[in-house]
Amino acid sequence: MNQLFPIIRHTIALTLVMIAGGLLGGCEKADEYVASPHENFEALWKILDENYCFFAYKEIDWDEVYDRYEPLLTDTMSQYALFDTLGDMLNELKDGHTNLVSTFNLSRYWDWYLDYPDNFDEKIQENYLGRDYSIAGGLYYTTLRDGQIGYIYYGSFSSGAGESGLDNIFYQFKDCTGLILDIRNNGGGLLSNADRIASRFAEEEVLVGYIQHKTGPGHDDFSEPYPLYLAPSERIRWLRPVVVLTNRQCYSAANDFVQKMRVLPYVTTMGDRTGGGSGLPFTSELPNGWSVRFSASPMLDADQRHTEFGIDPDIPVDMTDEDMQKGLDTIIEAAIRYLLNKAHT
Image (cartoon, rainbow, N blue to C red; front, top):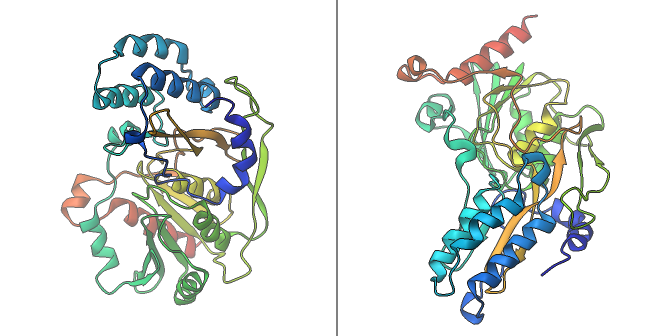
């Protein structure tokens, strides 16, 4: 159960190509194991103590958390009560990538976005997409303002984003002067999809961030930041103005995508702060077979800053009640005005 950090170190390259958002499955064999509440508590606390990557950044006193939660355990508590207690302890990390998984429940932390405005309404978005929009994998696309502006909505980086589909989208937009790429309410998915799409907007190879991995059990035991680069696609690319629309429910791989896009010369981000979620997730198992997923490797932006708590847009815009009553999306309207002004300057 201990010394997980070498495993994380040696599997980081594989994990980078896997899921950064969405649940990584673990072994669910609770019925096959017998373990006391105290054993499972100690194991969970130690796994996080030696391997979680944001203790220092979030200023979390993990020993103090232990002292508060350990007295809540009893030898006779049910597995359901134990699950709730351990889940509450994990929520002290304020991390949407950190979950406890059993056969009967999944702990999760949602407060990273609940206190923010939605800044997205599917019914209003339909006024822009219409009902005859085209679909390429998980990307929905159409044109706005008499064909002047291309519009793409991508709701999950777990959805398909193939090279041929992207080629067709950009070909359809060949006469557009600007492009809106809307990823609001995108909770993440595959980092490979984020890279594939972002590469269509790159003019040359560019530094987009850094990653670190654990080198020991201490809270500050990390490698030097390792640089991450985005290479331009060898297929059709968009090298005209583009606005990426964000809101607080852009998390994990969506947050990573915004981090990459915002360093590109033709890109402007607009809307609300992203949800964050910059820790690369890893999984381990408790003595009773429950699995725990947690942020193990911090991913930093191009200036080596954390984005765990989100990324502010270049141009902040909130949807207004007045516009919504008219069936207008304030953020889309602002993006259209911005792109049309760009085309005439």
